[in-house]
Length: 274
Ligand SMILES: Cc1ncc(COP(=O)(O)O)c(C=O)c1O
Image 1 (cartoon, helix red, strand yellow):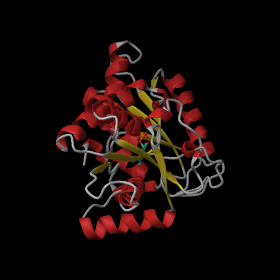
Image 2: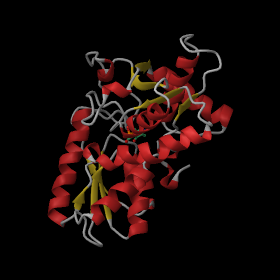
Image 3: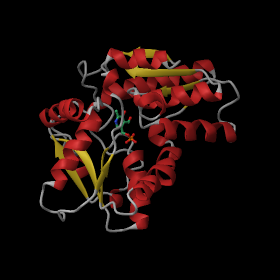
Image 4: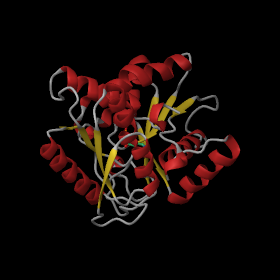
């Protein structure tokens, strides 16, 4: 329910403002990014407000609704053919192809290539805003934090903020069964339902000290929780949100934490674009 319907609005705003401030982005120049949809939604809102055109490249394996939503938010969308994924299942190789296209377009049009996987502003904004808000809104009672990992900015930024305030907060990353590099396991399944996360490798700014454990989720659990959240809670959210809830429930019912544990997680985006 954030602006743009995704968890990326804060990170996007921070990136655009920082690039304008130090001259990487000229006034009115285009912003270009590779995105599976979420960062595109955040950037579209930030770019519209700050008066920059936005071009996003996206793997053609993402749902067509994503492209339509980004266009509705004011972005120009360039679809990049898949390398080894399938519709609805985007692999690391598919994402790399979309990133190459974004860099080429940025060079051609004199635009600023965001490169969210390497933008320090993303984690910083979650450390300075999202984490402290969770802490304050739970009156400091949060015991556990659970989130799936794309760039890792949401997980790491919030984990850092919570652990600064209470080093005993348990921080759990969510990974699809068979695709768990954060747990140190070999990747045996590149295709999974949790679009926008778990690309089969450890993200560039990863800090393993902030992760206490990795929780596996199956595609079946994710489907089940996506439906349950919609039909029982009135929350029509995306797959990573469902994965986060599935993993949080698994953690709370695992018996490894006290019965009165309070866990926080994030519903990363609306389900309307899937
Ligand atoms: C749908 C969705 N969920 C979760 C995430 C993970 O967020 P982060 O990049 O902060 O790890 C992303 C990132 O793109 C996403 O698109």
